[in-house]
Length: 173
Image 1 (cartoon, rainbow, N blue to C red):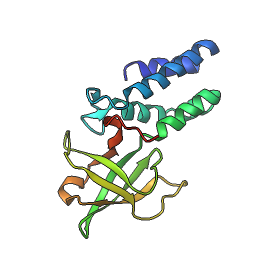
Image 2: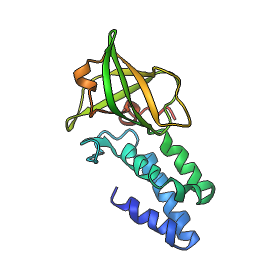
Image 3: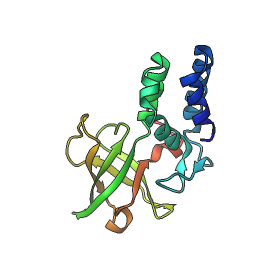
């Protein structure tokens, strides 16, 4: 994570060849971090985030620069989108689970996704399945997710949900 701002500065201000190399290094970092259980970092939104998800969030914050950096930058953004994050803003009990309202960053894949809830400085040891409660909109990051088998206390704000495959070594990208 420390190198990401430096590499992005090279993309923005450096020679085009150096920028292409920096994009390649960012792509390598994103790919190699997936599935490594030992590689977690503290972020502003959670304490033990998989490095790949933290890097993806950083890359999304620089989407304009990456989109303007040609095919390599756009491909890197597309890869980062697979490392979605859902910031819970409100949650209510819903049958045998929880309905969570919040903001989705990245691209939520498919209909159901295994997730890893983060709360109060730690990862909640839950194996929960998350699915969109309503169809997701490409025009707004606001979303409502259905979290089967979860308890309200585990998902209540300020919980953050991340894809569990990032640390399982089984990336479904």
